Image (tube, rainbow, N blue to C red; front, side):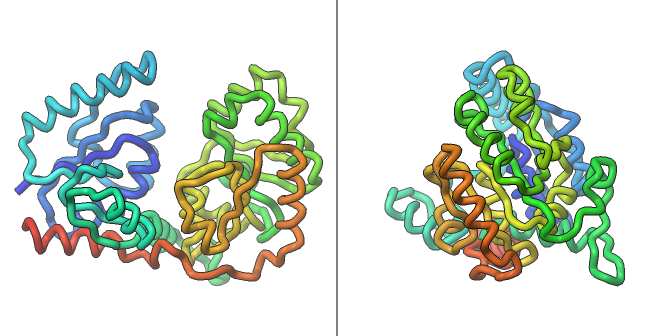
Amino acid sequence: MTIAVITGTRPEIIKMYPIIKLFDSRSVDYKYIHTGQHYDYDLFLKFVEEFEIRKPDIYISADISNPVNQVASIMEKIGSVLNELRPSLVLVEGDHISDILFAPTNVSTRNLENEHVHGEVHTVGNTVIDAINLCLDNASTDSNNNIHTKGMTESSGTDELEDDDFVLVTLHRSENVDDIDILRQVLMALSDSNLKYIFPMHPHTLKRIQEYGLIKQIGEGVKIIPPLGYLDFLKLLIKCRFVITDSGGVQEEITSPRINKRALVLRECTERPESVESGHSVLCKMEHKAILEQIKGFERIDSKKRTTKSPYGIGEAAVKITDILERKFF
């Protein structure tokens, strides 16, 4: 029996990583296929090397001339690949028409049941918590339990940052960075708050800031650094006071028992309501005044005061998923 394991984006690699590692440890027969939706192959390989998983057995080089052509190209090529492989099972992120669906929370399970999906639903937790545990367990530590990582934090001048001495910022969603007014409002709020920020900046965000002539809006307290490897990013999550982000993945990651931080989410709605309900995330309007008020509110909160437990589990999702698959198919 052969399983086709498919990823397309970097967040999908992170979430599939614990399952791939478990498949390897249990000698599960699988073929790893990457569709290249995030088409920077070198950046993709950095994740593969960092996670110490094997390179894809099949890498689909898609047409990236525009989003429509990219999707059409991936659909056409993945169909040909699967027709040739004839796998007994396909494991993929986020497909509602699957025969078996692994939901991260009870809320997600209820949503699927309300949609009357035809497949059976299992609540297993979120594999991103597993991924965080694996990464941190594999990192070397010193006698003071400080994490040592290989990568960009040291070369970016962030390795000596003190705990709770800075706020971590990520911003990459097109609806935010492609809107000059929204981007200006965010940068002004950061500058006017007079806090220290570390901002690993996505290339697209930097491109837009340059195109819009907003470089001068970046305050002296905002340190821009290049995108980070996953372990380096986790290190900053652990050390920061709180997070300002528009990332869905970060809303999940901050709930990890190993991180347990709060985030100001620069969106008016989110697909991760569990992170809001647990008190880890707070949604915010994309307006200068609203952002600044929320930052000041976060600043008044004791950063060492922990929130509730993670709604996404403690890091057992990959084992639960693999156990269910083994009982049913192996």
